[in-house]
Amino acid sequence: MARECPRIGDALESLTGVLFFTSGAFKVEPRTTADISGEVIPSYALLGTVVTMDDGLSVLQDAYVIIRGDRIVAIQQAEPPGVPIVDCEGLIFPGLIDAHNHAVWNILDLIPFNRTFNDRSEWRAHPLYADFQTQYYAMRNYGGSDAQTSNAYKLAEVRALCAGTTMIQSTNCNGPAYDYFAHQGIGIGNAERFPSRVFDSVFPLNETQAFWTQKRGEYWERFVIHLSEGINAGALQEFYTWRDWGMLDGRTTILHGVPYGPSEWTQMAAAGASLVWAPASNWYLYAASPNIPQALAAGVNVAIAPDWTESGCRDMLAEMKYGYALNVSLWGGMLTAEDFALFATRNAAQAMGLHERTGKLAPGFQADCLVIPGDPQSPYDALLAADPADVRLTVVSGRPMYGDQELMTQFPFLESMEEIEICGREKMLAVQVDAFAIPASDKAMSLVISELEEAYGHALPRVCAFLGPYYCSAAGADDLAHAGGPSLSVWPNPSRGSATLKLGGLGGGPARLEIYDGRGGIVRGLLAGTRGAADRLAVWDGRDEAGRRVASGVYFVRLDGGTRASGAKIQLIR
Image 1 (cartoon, rainbow, N blue to C red):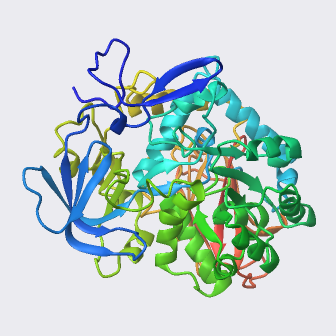
Image 2 (tube, rainbow, N blue to C red; image 1 turned 45 degrees about the vertical axis):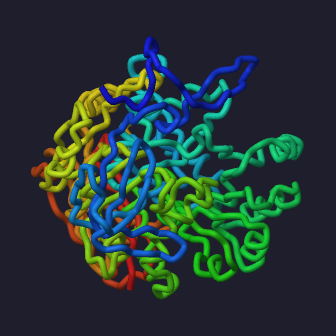
């Protein structure tokens, strides 16, 4: 049986690996399937239009991506002899790289704030955030001792897979203190996993300058840091503190950087530092965004990522759409679909220090692939338009893990596949891997979801909706899948004047639906009183209580079902 990871009791004739020293113990660490002698994943080829994302942005029609183990061994337009061929009938991209996320938190939807903030200390001090944390930890600890942690990781990674993501920046896992996090989920990777030399920090300035001076002298290739989350002077000063500590160099990747202007971009570009843009989260929390065209003009490497589901989008495809809409609203569409494809692939690999092994399709690179339908003449537009239901195949390190049934069934080495449906389309998951080092790696997703739903039902207070992995984003990008309580979705979003709001889970109880502006003021009340139907539609025409058209921007929707509430945001573009 083909396996991705060796198990205790396996007999191997030879093993190539890295001798890894930690806490006084030497151990051999097989890093990838290429480190295990023999073909763990049989060689095969994908046929389609290959969108390489290489330096020349080559697009090769009717080309073959030949995969052996976890690597691409060749890309060619001549049919390879003696290799099974799977005709994808689509565009073959590198897998998307989520360069900023907190995967274990992504079991819950938006925190229903009804205002924006000046910096992250403000929203973290908000009473609703405290209630959210109580709910989250009650859910994660349901069953005792963080019993739902593995389920939470697996759900987050499956949702990412469905949107073509093959790598996530998530948490440190170098050293024995991080072993638990290093082996979570189904193994689509967090960017920090060995052999990467990536060190991330959510609160880098909580450490001392001496701490970072020591780190600077170690072997790290990237310091991925949350910095300048907000719009005030304090948020901006964080950049200068990091610089004055002598840490601003080519190893710095800044997550957020909301208030930066020409001076900061120039300094970042000169140092070779990168930025990871989280458009939805920044706009939801601060009604602001770093000026991305300005950053690019200065020469800053820019990637894009969702942050987390409590304030950002659910997946990379949705985040790219949100960023593009913001680009149209703020900068008149200066950023192109090609820019967004780069943000999510090659630029993200550069930001994570992984550009020598992922981020593009090339011989010797990891076989991380995303297949979608689309016109070969405009592949980047196709990527920007794609939804999880459109994704025909996601391949992680050579292993197909999600896709259309007619494609997934052509890989005979896949086992324990599950059938799922997204937006009326039949899909298959292959996420039950045989890996002893990954907790619950062989657990079916149906069981993961049922256990999390049970945990959600017992976690109080009920602040955020439970966020399942599957949804019909083509019909409504904000559909919620949760057990009990009201649900709220908005379509289209962004909206150019009128938005339809789908309300669910109301039963016959009292309900109130209100639109708020970024300062927390009520713009419009759309629903009040008792409703007898479980599901209803409401329409907001982009006007306030006086019938005046409101300005472009982000507005907050709150559906209060009496004892429970749900929230969403509307990006209004005039």
